[in-house]
Amino acid sequence: MDIIVCIKQVPDTTEVKINPETNTLIREGVPSIINPFDENAIEEALRLREKHGGKVTVITMGPPQAKEALKQAIAMGADDVALVSDKAFAGSDTWATSYTLAQTIKKIGRFDIIFCGKQAIDGDTAQVGPGIAEWLNIPQITFAVKVELQGDKIKVERLLEEANEVVEVPLPCMLTVVKQINEPRVSSLKGMMKAKKTEIKTFSAADVDADPLKTGHNGSPTRVVKIFTPPPKGGGEMLCGSTEEMVSSLISRLKERKTI
Image 1 (cartoon, rainbow, N blue to C red):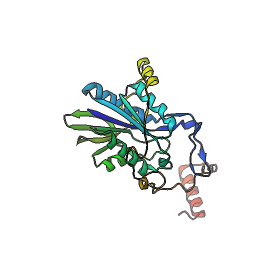
Image 2: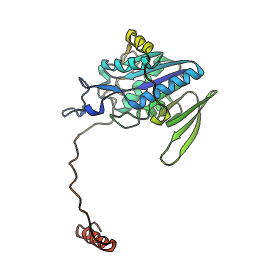
Image 3: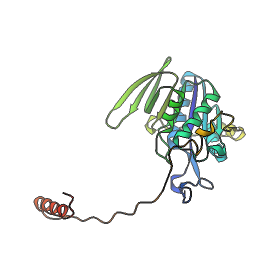
């Protein structure tokens, strides 16, 4: 069983800062963490490996400082890690990011399952995992809350708003997981010692045979035009009186504003 987990290093949500000129996140000098949903993805991959055997490889695309996230993955129990880092990837949107990660997975070779967190807390798009599946032309199941391997197929329970859905697909496939799927383990002392000694291999755009027209700004069809903080809403007004009086008053005010 060969399992790949795609993770992202994100700014601590209490320290998010925006570059007003480029409209992009300022990552340098900002405390960073593994995207919380991705920790659940790592944990689920490790549980499958422990039950069925195999290998867990964790990859991430980002600046050199993202090596720290990969070291944490090793400390949790990952067998191998890889950083995809190149100036050519700067400014990548979810389309370009998913393409680059898919190219990296092709470079790594054989895989049975790809795990991703359901979304990143800095972008909240939930698009990269499904995008990887599309580039690789494999089945995908999102919002997984329970995973069960059954031979050359996988049975997944999906968390929906009002009910859960059970889906079965053949391997290889891509799964995104929600936080309810498990509780990520605490890194062991042995794992932390291994992480400290591990040399993180880095792939460049050339190493993964990335098309320059599909990476970075060149490969990103979306653009952030403006980022701003919405103005605070004005204070509301409390209606008083009986139900009939409040309804009558509300209707009058709505008519004054030509809402009705």
